[in-house]
Every structure is written in C-alpha cells, then in structure tokens.
Image (cartoon, rainbow, N blue to C red; front, top):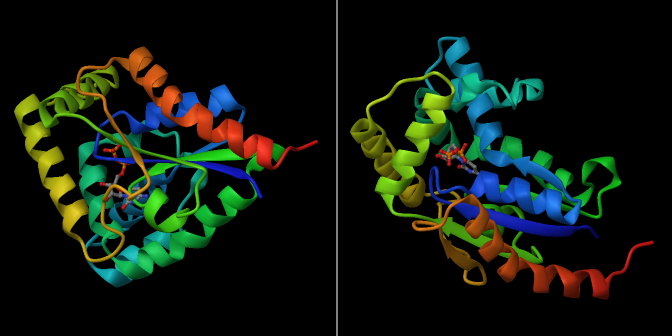
Length: 222
Ligand code: CDP
C-alpha cells in the first residue's frame, strides 16, 4: 500500500502549490486532479461542445490529452468554469475515477506515496488517506492570488470579476449532487488567508508530518 496525502479545498486556495511542496518534501508523486477536469473541459471546447451536456462532456473525458496537463491554456477562468460544469456530471467523474485511484495505488516512478489535490480526494477518491488537508482562504485573498497568477501568464483580468467567478464556482462545487466540495470529517483545516507560501507550507507540514511518520513506521519500505 502506498502512502496517500489528500489535499482538498476551494478554488485558488493554494492547495496545488501546497500539494506540490508536500510531494517534494516527502519524495512522493503528485497529481493535480483538477487538471483532469480542466483537460476534459479543454477537449469539449475544442470540439465546440457544451460542457454542461453529458454526451459532449463524457466524450471529452474519454479523450483527454494528459501531455497538456502543464499547458497554461487550461489555467484560464473560462476553462475553470467549464471544468466545474463537466465535473458535476456523474459519468464524467466515473470515467476519471479509476485513473486517480490507480495513480494513488501505484505512484509513478516507484514513489512510496502520492499527494493528490482536488475537491473530493479525502471524501471519495481516497477516504482512507493517511493525511488529509482542507485548504481555504477568504474569497478576496483567493481572487487576488488568481489575479497575480493570471497576470504572470500575461492574462489581464478584472479582480472583482475574478472574485465573482471564484465565489460562483465554489458555490457550484459545494452544492452539486455528486462528490461535492466539502471537508472530510477527519481532514485538518488549513486557512491560508494570512499565510504566504512558506508559512502555509510550514503549517501544512506541522499537520501532515506526524501522520506520515506514523504511516512510514507502520509499513516500512525497503
Ligand atoms: O485551480 P482551481 O482551484 O481554481 O481549480 P482546479 O483545482 O483546477 O479545479 C477546476 C474545477 O474542477 C473545480 O472547480 C471543480 O469543479 C473540478 N474538480 C472536481 O470536481 N474534483 C476534483 N477532484 C478536482 C477538480
């Protein structure tokens, strides 16, 4: 059994950055599950499909191009909104389910563990994860971070509009019927409102390290 860290949270809460840092710290593999939904959305829009229509969305989920997971084109808010739409469709989630489970069970590169970030990792994909974080921050702070991120990619956006989009997407993610965004009962809440990247990582490590230490002790690997 590999060791699993589940990092869930709201849009632009910093969960991806934290997940990456945790993976590097422990020498684990990392997967951003949001990229799967964003790639699905990209495929749907490239085919001029409707992300809210099951047939189009499912076709997109079955044709995602994983080599584009790092492509800045999937980071736009248009893709983010379409990702949230395809993510509300149960058959789309089912189509992406096994890939995520398999990544956690057999992390690439023979890593002893994996870190996955998303919305339903601690609740649905890996309910038995060794450590679970739920990352959140005040919406205004998240909108500002997203504005900085998009600016860095050369995409100029109005911050108030970004705030409205983030709030709307969180609402859609929290209220959908299937795998809604919510904190698992055994997840540790990490509020990064007043924490920059380094303090947020230090706080995450304080929560996660003891759990990983005991998991490593319980199942030492060779
Ligand atoms: O980066 P950001 O937090 O804005 O979004 P993301 O993690 O890339 O996820 C984009 C969208 O995919 C979310 O708004 C969710 O609707 C969906 N998603 C999901 O439903 N389940 C996941 N495990 C990950 C993402």
